Each structure stands twice: as C-alpha cells, then as structure tokens.
Length: 181
Image: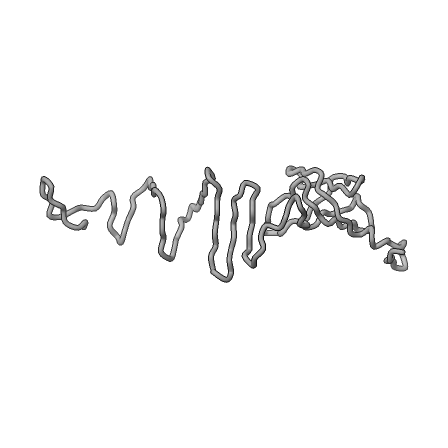
C-alpha cells in the first residue's frame, strides 16, 4: 500500500500521485505551456519550470519527447507543473565532464571549463556570432584572429589611426616610406 499524507482538514493523498514521470507531448511557446503524456493520459496545457523567472529570466522551452518530472499538487494532474528534464536515449546527457555545457540541436555549444578557465563558443559551419553592445566592447587581453577582419570604421593601433595617419620620408618609386606618425 502506498503511503498517504493527511492533515486534520484534508482527505488522505496518495504520495505516488504527487510525482510522476512523463514525456512532453506538446509545447506552446506563445503561452509558455506544455502538455505531458503519462502513458495513455495526457495533461491539459500546464506550466513548465524555468531556470529563473524573476528580474532575471531564462527562456529554454522543453522539446517534444523530452522526459520530465510532473509535480501534481494534491495528486491532481490538472494542477501539474512540468519540472526539469530527465536524460534518456532520445535526449542523452550533453556532457560527461565538470565542464558546464549548453548544447544546441544544430551542434552549437556554449561551455565553461572551470579547471582550464576557458569560456568557449563553438558554432557549426554557416553559423554566425553577433554581439550588439551600444556602449561598446572592451577586451582586456591579447586577441588572436584566424581569418579576415572587416571594420566599417577607423582602426586605431597604439594611438595611430589607420585611415588618418601620415608617413614621413615619402619618396616616389620603389623606396619604402618612414614609420606612420
């Protein structure tokens, strides 16, 4: 017999009905609701938990077929909340190290390795990386670029402008000019 919870003013609740394992059957990103299948039973649209939902918010809706834990307050599936995600054959673990990792369906990855102190973005062929920072971007450290660099504005190196600098000791012909000023 399953254990039951009760208080003096409540009917006993079957604790086995409080938590159930189910599979995401439908996702409505417009409302933030999902439907969960538990065997032959399918919930009405219910909320799913997120990493954060206060002043800082994280949006990462579950995928159809993703296995979740369903919390059913009072044992009522209609009041259910889809919690977390459970690794399974269709959606195995993304990693097997201490490295923090977010893996996307197209192969893109965002990871941080706390042992090597490396934050990495790995994008598949054809993908682009864009930063929009109206206040600017500051990098404190050496930068390596393996590929073409395109700039629409001036490039300044050690206070010398690429577009406005002048050369001294300029001579016509094959001679080299002096250093930029």
